[in-house]
Image: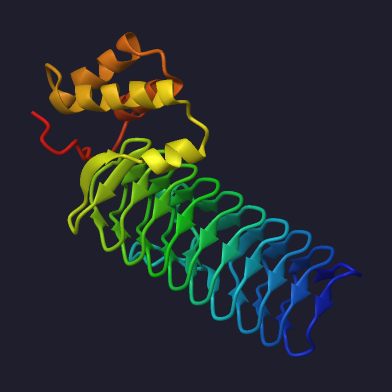
Length: 268
């Protein structure tokens, strides 16, 4: 094992041979670090947390008690192949959260970006791709192969179906099941996940101008009530609007996906 001289390791912690512990790490009582784990600078593992598998934890990330990070996928097709989990910098992984490594069939990698908050009991499934500054509230379940864009918030007790994509800046209300793709900056709520408008609060917090928000609202109305199919309406967005956020929505809808889309309430 490689333990940096500035790291502080509690005598009851278990650091398996092969692990790499970076500078200024703090390893608490009864924490377990597996043989293929690399902890970046300033990582904190609180008591009874477990980091195992082929796992990389970014600088200044903190993992709270009883979190399980890097265990094998919950996938019956998994047959022991060597797959990875990579967690970014400054993440906060709270009590009882679970993050699994990838599978061979899904590309072999589960990834979490920087500055994410993964709250108590939340789950990140195999081969999921989580962006930066994502918040998964208590007991959220992200299934395998999902893609969650930057700045997404998923409300407590919500579930995201496997292969679903959620675009940047979207917000999912509490106790919601999301079974289809969510456009960037979308607002989804109701038990069976309905696209119910735009994340206006999030857009304002991101500094999007009033003119930009006006364009987004008009684009959303076009998606809901314009002529042609949903895909045809999306193709026209880039032609009719000069907003970068609107262009992002158009590109998201036209990209390859394994799911269909949540469409605006009342869409024709």
